[in-house]
Length: 418
Image (cartoon, rainbow, N blue to C red; front, side, top):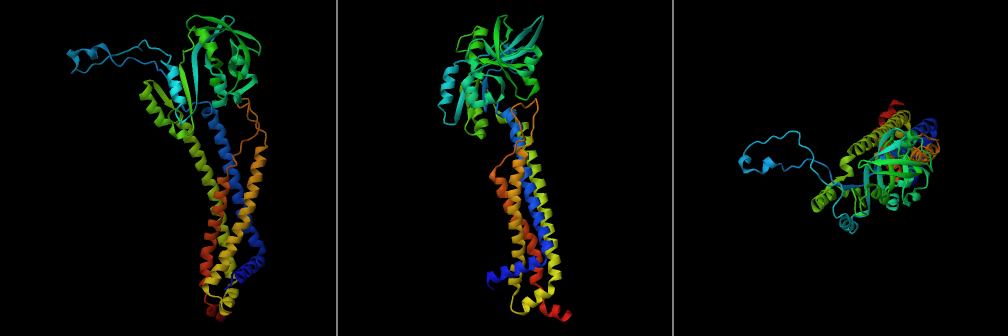
C-alpha cells in the first residue's frame, strides 16, 4: 500500500480524536521543553560552580614541599640496617622553597606541545599591619599578563585596574581582607614579612573569587614586587603553574615531570576530585529527571493509542477487509505515534530554547559572585540532539505495541460482533 494513503489515513484518525492527539502532543512538548531547559540550567550552574575553582587552578602546579628528611642518620648506620628503626617527632629539614633552575624548567615546559601556557609565581605569608593589630595573610606574586591570559584573573578583579599591578609596590587585596582593613583603592597599607622586612604598598584594586575564606586572606602583587619584598633575586620562584591544551593529560604529565625535574607536582584532577564528582552527580540527576519526563509522556501516548484502537476496531476491520494487510495497519499507527513525537518534539525543542533564554535573563546577584549577573544557562547542542532523538524513540516504542495489537485484529470477528 502506498505511503501517501497510509499518511492520509493516519491524519484522518488523528483528527477524529483531535483532543486526545493534542493532549499526547502537549505531553511530548512539555517533556522535551523541561528536559532541554533543565539540562541547560543545571549544566550552566555546574560550569559556574566548577569555574570558581577550576578557572583559577593550574592544570599542573610545580613546587617544593617542606617535609622531613626521609634519610635519617640511624638509617645510614650499618649496625641497625636489619633492625626496625622508629623515630618520633622528626622535624622538617632545612630546604629551599624556591624552585632550583626555574628558568630552564619553564623553558622546557613552554616547548612541550601539550602545554598551552606557563606562569611563574611567588607566594609568601605576611602580616598586614592595621594599627596595633597584625592580620595574617598571603601575597601572591604573579606574572600579571600571563595570569590574566591563562587563569581568568581579570574576571575576579571587581574594582580597580589589574594592569596597575605592573607598577612596583602595588597590591590588589581580597575583598574580605580589604573590608577587614577598611582599605580603599588608592590607600597605602603596611606589610611585614616573616623575615621582618617592612614595606608600604598601594591598593590598586579588589579581588573577589566567591570563596570567602580565600578572599579573607589572599592578595596579589606583581612577581617582581614580592621578590623585592623578600629581598630575593629575579630567579626566585616558588610555584610554576601550567595550563594544558587537554585537561585529561594533567595526571600523566604531572607524574612524568615530577620524575624529570625532581620536584613536587600536583595535577588539578587529583586535588579537585570532589568538584568533578559533584558535577557528575548533578548531571546524572538532570538526565534522570529529564528522561523520566519523556518516559511518562511515552506512557501517555501509549494509553491514547490503545484507546484509539479499541474505539476504531470496526474501522480497522473494514480497512483489513478491503485489502489493507497487517503491515499496513501497523504502519498507520506507527505513523500516528511518530507524527506526535516529531511535532511535539520540535515544538518542545523550540520552547526549551526560549525557556533557556528566559532563565538567562533572570537576575542573580550575590556578593559572593560579583561577576555573575543572571542565572547561567548552557546552550550545548547535544542537549537538543539527545532530547530530539529520545522523543522519537519514546514515541515510536509507545506506538509500536498498540500498532502490533491493531495489526493482529481479525476483521471477521469484529464484523460478526457488530
